[in-house]
Every structure is written in C-alpha cells, then in structure tokens.
Length: 362
Image (cartoon, rainbow, N blue to C red; front, side, top):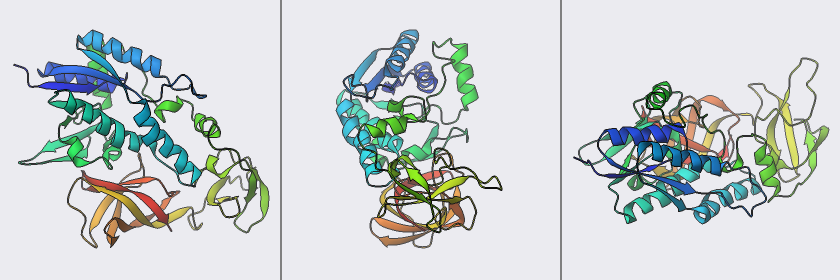
C-alpha cells in the first residue's frame, strides 16, 4: 500500500537520486521534479551547467520509472537569489545565495508547488535529520558530519518544512554512493556540484559574473599603517581573510598578505599578515539580525552552539537580545575572517534552532 504521493527535487546529483530510490522502495508514490533557475540563454553569463543537470535528473527518473516534470522558477530565482547576491556585493556585504535558494526556492516556491498540486509531502537530498515529536518536529545535524547540511536550513520558515522528508539524514555519503552503484543509477559516479549553482564549477567565475553587473572601481591597497602597497580593481572582488588575488609579494619571512578590511569611505583595500592579534581579521563579538527560529527563542545569557559559516566547526557562544529582531552573540574563541552579510546558524546540541545574518562584527 502506498504511503502517500511524494515530490522529490531531483537536481541531477546522486544524493537526490538515492533519496527518490529510498522513498520508492519504502512504498511512497514518488514523482521527480527539476526546477529551472538560472537558465536564461539571453544572459551574458552561461556557465551554469543546467543542461547536464536536467539530462542527469531525467535519466534518473527514467531509471527509477517515476513520473518527472520540469518547472520554471527563473524569475523567482532572479529576484530572490541572484539580485540578492548582486546587491549584497554592491553594498559591501558577503552574501550567501545558497541559503536564500533554500529559503525562497527549494523550501519556498517548490513547497508551494507541492501544496498546489496535491502532493502529501516533498523530499530532498539534504544530509540532515528531521525528528517528529507528538505535535511538532525538529531538524538536526546529519549523521555524516562531513556532509551535514542543516546549516543551509537555518533561515527557512519552519512551516515550510512540515511536510518535507530527508531520507539521507542517517546515512553517510559513502553509503549513498554504494547504494547508487548497487542499483546502477546513471549518475552514480557523478561528482558533487561545487560553489554557486549558476556560476559553474570554477571558483573564479564569481568575479566574471559580478563584472556583468558591478563595474570595476580601482583604488589603493594599503597596509595597516596606511602605506600604499599597490592597487585593486574593486572592493567587491575581495573577501575578508582572502590571500590569493591580492597580487602582492610575501615578506622576507615568507608571510603572505591577506585582506583585513575594506575601507569603502576611501575605496581602500586594507591588507596585513595573518596574526591572531590583528584587529579586524579575528572577531569575537557579532550583532545578528534577520533572525529566523525553528525552535524556542534563546533566553538572555543562554549558552548555545553556532556554526559561523558552512563547514566551520560548531562554536560555543553566549546570547544577548538587543531588540526583538536583533541579538548580540559572543564567541568563546575569536573567529577568523567573518564578514557582514554572512549567515550564522544556531544549535542546541545537534538541534538546529535557527539562524541570522551578521550586521556588525568586532
């Protein structure tokens, strides 16, 4: 007997493919869906590998013998993810488009599509756990700590996760690959996607993309004492802590310059050497806004765990409220190269309780 009609977001990758297989094996009536995001052929930038992704997703659906559809979210994605990225860099912030894709597209527009078309639920290939309680549920880190993706859900509205399943939460990436090979999935050996989906796989593509929208604005590169060391092509091309691309030689001790701060008032890129006592490069206090909660809000003075960025280890913090939508957090240990605009996720143990965006750091 079928357990219900489930919509599975097929990205073309092995994780979502195995999720669809596991749900079909568990007697769900599975439908695959691929959403079009940044696939406008008239755009100057065409690095997005969407055709390969779509072909892979279709091949998976054919192999599993499940219905498959393609939906167009291009305009949603442009407004809520791409424009957010561009305006973030324009204003001197360091945005996280993957977080916004999860909030507004995967667990926003796609959830609406699921609800409007009579599905009982939706599933993705995220490595995180959903634990159901009497009248509610909680989201937890996945069993595979190297692949845990709970961080990306920290700004998603809780009600949008109510009918979402995460079949891979208790599995490791290695186990998922083994399943894919055992059932001969056509994408079993396909590499994981890296970086921002619409930029392709090359890390330098973000600079080329931004140049289509943000003109170069050359300025001076200075050290911590204000000495001019060179020139830069635009502050939006750099992030705090960056070493490569500054185009300055190392010193006699073979120390490399890194970005310490960005002086927008004078259009100056401030660089120095990576020392623990360098003010600006290491921060211990942050103001966080745009808060979103999946669990009870923290109490003043509460001790929590925080992931300063994706892939960062969890850090102990102390929470203080500044106002209803803004809080101050204090890290027990200084954190390297945080930046305004980045996203921080909050936990009680392994339970994701929410997240926010850095608005001030010191």
